[in-house]
Length: 135
Image (cartoon, rainbow, N blue to C red; front, side, top):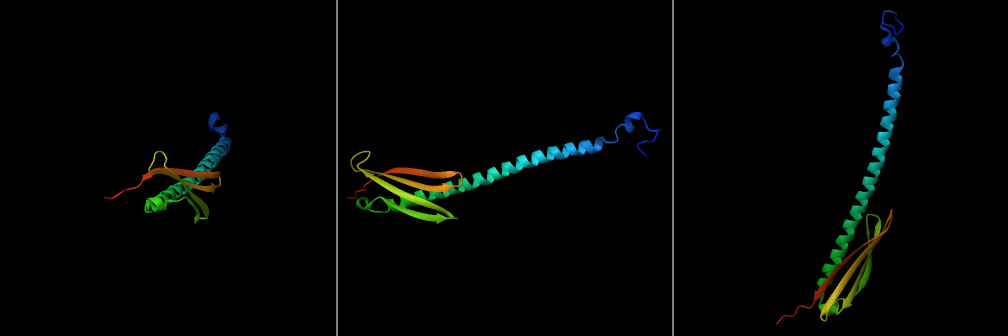
């Protein structure tokens, strides 16, 4: 049945081009939604990468603290090293303050820094050690 058929009610004959306009509006809404979801997914991938790098940095700081703890109390010394993981260069810097916060204690601070696409980042882990004396 043709859209110009005089036997069709008038309201049906006036609906001839509406489906094309509706389709264009629906495609426009879909495009806006798809671009928004695309931006959201890209942001989530970036955050996932950043979280992975933070996890690696904290693991390196913990590893350095454990290696320091394994040393004799008098052999604990400051140090620095670099390590590459997944194309990212991490710098691990260990500082040791003797007799802080009190006599016979050492404050050990490990700072792990790296460059992220969003800028330089770092994590700091700090602990206090004392000499264990065995009798």
